Length: 260
Image (cartoon, rainbow, N blue to C red):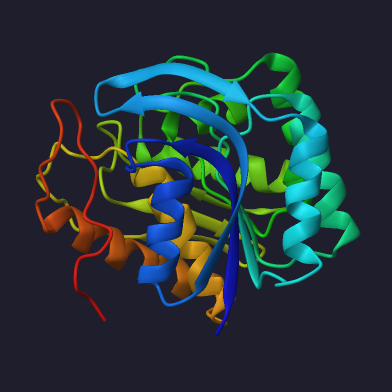
């Protein structure tokens, strides 16, 4: 059985973060492992507390995983401090990690910055060069592009510029009222639009975590990048279409819906 590791924060309500990643990876047919960067107190209404792990303890988690059950792919989600990002980069290099999916969680859906400028700088300098693919949403792409993105052409220009700067494939995710379910993938072969089905479901908590974890799972199983993204998009469409409705805010997806 192929294996995948998620490095991210814990969501105690189960809709995003480590919990969503593990559910997604298992649903996509791989054995899931985790290294936790932070504990969060959150639910469908918002985040009420965050407690980071220490860099030393994160390093111990990564050593424990890589020296026993080696992951075939790695997904990296929320990492709020530069010190933790440096540990992750060091361990990925030490263990020659493959199929690294970086979801650069920098900006919330509401537009709030989630990590410091210092941490963003370390992310760009240390982690991006180790990635197989990055999966920013529109606000995160704007941070990397350093310009507003208002059209499909803007998405294409931003993806090409980010690729040329960091030499890593980028999946510029639609949404945020722009190209809703359509994402733009840019690799060393150029760019292509990957169309998706618009699902009318307000419960979208954890969609970013879910997509990047599904991509990692498909890469772990040997899929090429375009196929991995395509299958991941099919999975997330099914999880949204299932219509799970939990909580008083933006609820979670049904990661366990039946699909093949």
